[in-house]
Image 1: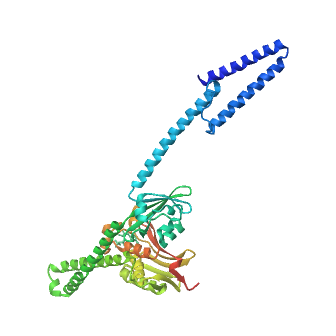
Image 2 (image 1 turned 180 degrees about the vertical axis):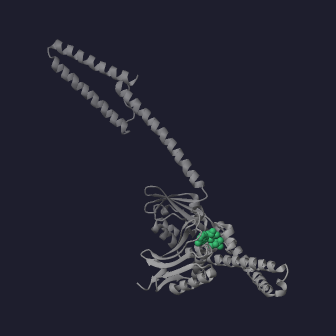
Image 3 (image 1 turned 30 degrees about the vertical axis):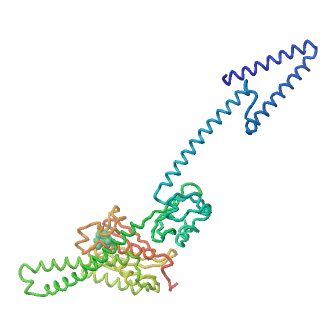
Length: 434
Ligand code: ADP
């Protein structure tokens, strides 16, 4: 029976009952009273059915007596909804289980964290890489399991733009790269990847570059020595060999500069380990860099100016700082046409200290700017080689700044000039004049 028919039938019954009762009441002379009793009986019957329905819904009594009429329809409808719900629940559970299984099969450790950084769920790899295994670790702050101060401050800063590299708490031989991604309000996914092999390869690469540069340095110095002697010999310079010797000397000098820059980069890449860090007074250092710029410019006639905030100090390694500043200044001299202007500035403000080299040089097309600090990347290959560039200067600047938590900003307009600015934050500087 459809719902409509059931309701029609119910109304018909009610109407028929009322007519019968009225007729019965009429025959005994009390139609109103009989009708009232009839209505009362009807209400009581409804109350009973409601009670049975309540019992049915509260699961106390599933065997409901009335199965016909509108009440029967209601029960059938409820049973159908319940069946559908059960089916949907089973499907959802299956999907959730499948999802959890796929997360468990991931080779990277995955941990679901709440807003208080408590571990709510983790996969098998998290047990292996992070040592999360006991049930008692669930709903406890993850930092207890990690036992790493670096990790705790990473969580504290809540800046997850770049990953954190730490040793695994389960096995200190393993190096992990940790990433945290928010995926819902107050929910985070922590992912830890085993990067031991990648880091090892990176070490091998760095060692190779450092060793190769070191090995090349001595033969090149010997070659340079001989070539210098040859350029001074009138006898050798006579005839066709004169320009060949000049060429050889020029190219050997270039190779020597590249090897020196590669060695500087290797030291910087290892975080400048073993390098003496001290408070360096900026005025004398920048004065020396300024003098160097004038010597480099020589007869090219650049107008070089220097503005330095007096009595300020920067924490770092003297040689690294010197190499950082002179790379930027020598680039400005090399890439600025004769007679151009070069402005060297060092100033301090609320954000920290800043070093800027501004030139009226050739400038750089916008598309090259993000890649300038890559090794051997040159915006203009021909020009860089003509000016004796190694292609490593800005890579050195970037690494030296990275070791001091500094940042490089490049503004440039082709044909107008460039500004290279280094920003140093408060922890690395002292403003004694203040
Ligand atoms: P290079 O030894 O070639 O100068 P760098 O790493 O120092 O290598 O610089 C990378 C490239 O950036 C250069 O080849 C040059 O194209 C560009 N560049 C650097 N400084 C300047 C500048 N002041 N003006 C214009 N271009 C510059």
